[in-house]
Length: 323
Image (cartoon, rainbow, N blue to C red; front, side, top):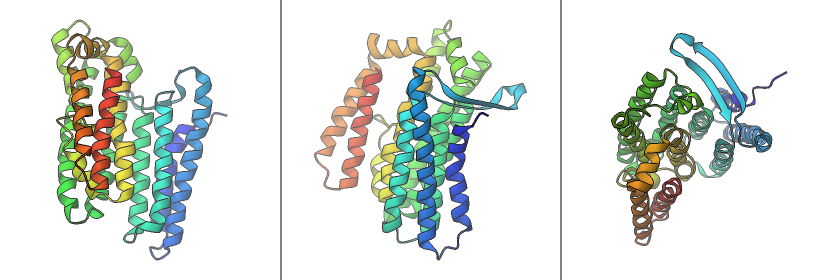
């Protein structure tokens, strides 16, 4: 009998959050350890999936397809391979550590904090496992909600301003991403990432290919973030609680880089090569991001702000590697 390990992995944090919701708020210890237990179960499942994926020679494993609107080719399609498996495991590991740390450090609204972290984990796991453009988009938007709450509620005096800046930047990126995937659907007739990549959208229409490429590239650059779209990160990183900062740097930023690897590069290999090698715009942006982020680090006396600019420089290295 087939075991839908990826769907169970996605549901585990949500079930953990529901269980925490039903526990009386005064029982702090029970709230914390149920959250940690749910995160540990997710970590166990993704580690098990990764161990099986390692033997698959890079092929997509544990693929699940459930059609819920066949007329528009809307499906729940998830899978895991050598690209997504390390990031999925990293997400589960960091969530477990954040909840374990929060059990001893978070003093207020512990129940809501635990639910928020578990919901964030489920949304990020969903994005990393999605093989459908629209599903990826939905999970990406869902991940923004708990991140916004973490910055706003536990961000202190600067939390609201930082959260507003974060959300506005993310909404711009989300709108660009939505426009891009709708254009790809119009060209290919599918939201399936693998099928759309095989169809080579806009291969015979260079202006459209260039336009859609830059729409998606800008969206992912905001998420990563790459200069000049990095300004939301230092404020959000500084205002967020320690657990929120860990998940911002260790999980949310990676979704931008993952989107470039999973979506932008396979669907537009020619345009990616053109703007990395022939006209090295992406390469130049990566170098500027690395140098700028590294130099600004030297002027920081706040550890969180230092970590934020380290993250900016690191994502520059990711883009440079792709270029």
